Length: 403
Image (cartoon, rainbow, N blue to C red):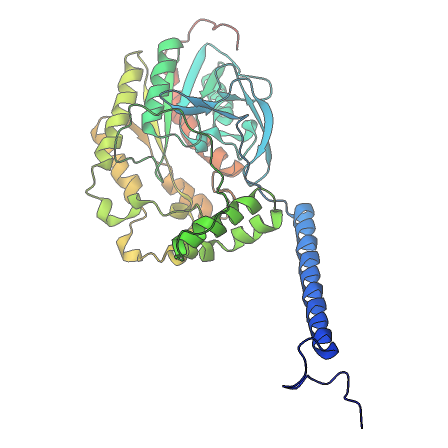
């Protein structure tokens, strides 16, 4: 009798625990283990290469930078000296005793003062303070009017017109200024309702792993995919790089924080949001006027208004019907409403489009706030206008020491 081949495939009568079946499982397990190890090595090598050659922004929860604030929601903490990376580069962050962002040497005080109000575009955590609008404006104004100028940066990320009003009133009641400049980002500063009070901000919640409550797309995203995203965003440079390159896919999957503002949809042209925003701006100007100060409103354009390729990404990612969208609408309608309210407005959109068409990168590639070039262009456009206003005012006596 011939012995069966030990490597033969077991037949129907072969016991399940035979050496042949055990050998097949061992080979399969070894292959899977080898595949897993190869994938881990490839991912590890990719992570190391990205960290060395193209480090990315890791999402950070930074309670050391922001603090809850009654009526405003949140503020910069006072007397900060730290660094942060919001996507483009590591940036130094310093604040003064009032929680206003300043340069390494502190706030430069001078007899002539300008107060700036705005959101993350003014806070400018994507660039060093010396490259930001406040610092550049301070230099340009001092040179233009022939005397020192101190620019106070009261910008805080995430704020809107109602918070500009509350913060502006408080600073105007306590300090002396010669002009007020309000930076309005048309991508989210056109608000549908007025907020007279913002409660102190609760700590940021990180998504946690859990079992889906139902086998639906939304539940799977919230229970598994979003926690995985939050975990990797805080730890993996490779993940952040891939996510940046796959913007369109992630938009379609609903796994990105990007959104297309409703202000650009033609259906919003008759909304009350334009009057609500203009009314709040009128109150800011009135608060400044009670102190004898002019107020300039600057309309900051969005990246997709300025760069056609960025708009094409949004169209592809969100499936936008371009016939329902007007890219000039927020700037045009807000400019018209502010002018009708008798307010002083600067619209830099044409100059931004011309600079972008000439090849200047005005926004970041990872974090889509202004690049150093964007800050430089805006300050160059605003400085002459503010300087003319300051020259029309008499020079003040020397102010006290900077805090």
